[in-house]
Length: 182
Ligand SMILES: CC(C)(COP(=O)(O)OP(=O)(O)OC[C@H]1O[C@@H](n2cnc3c(N)ncnc32)[C@H](O)[C@@H]1OP(=O)(O)O)[C@@H](O)C(=O)NCCC(=O)NCCS
Image (cartoon, rainbow, N blue to C red; front, top):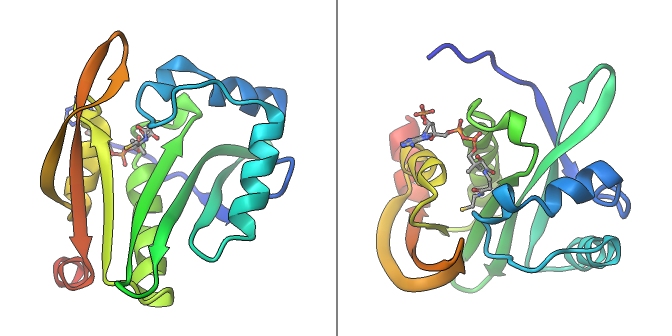
């Protein structure tokens, strides 16, 4: 496959980053939301409150994924380290590229690797876990290529597209990540 590498920037979200009409439309797009844990529509005030709560939280870090289009900074998704447990040194990773034209261009792979470097090197965590709906083959393929191991299945965990779906649990330890990188 010949994929042109796309340059992106990760930065903390500001209050109004998620509230433009274009971003709101993407956040409420059923084709995107079918893959996410969230099912209810979101409003501008939901998004403002969410940004304010994550930016003041000691247990999660969320970044916006931005690309440059015609000299303009465009928000295409978010990624984060959530539920940080500072005693057991583990956390949950999450990513959503909600601008669909940017799917399958290896941005997800690269962003998750950036987040893992941040989680293991800067936050000094030992274990990162995540999960994906069983039909989200793109996400599962990406996580496994990065080195996540399948750790189990939560049966009938999410109702999406008119039926129940299993949730695939995935985890990655710091030593495994650096062993396969070297
Ligand atoms: C999931 C997501 C983060 C992946 O990011 P991305 O930039 O699109 O993915 P990448 O291009 O880095 O990698 C996708 C991989 O899936 C593979 N893939 C795609 N369709 C596939 C299929 N039907 N079967 C198997 N593998 C498939 C691709 O070939 C690619 O692997 P490769 O690079 O080894 O060829 C992004 O698509 C997204 O945010 N989707 C919507 C929300 C979502 O699903 N979030 C994750 C919730 S767990």
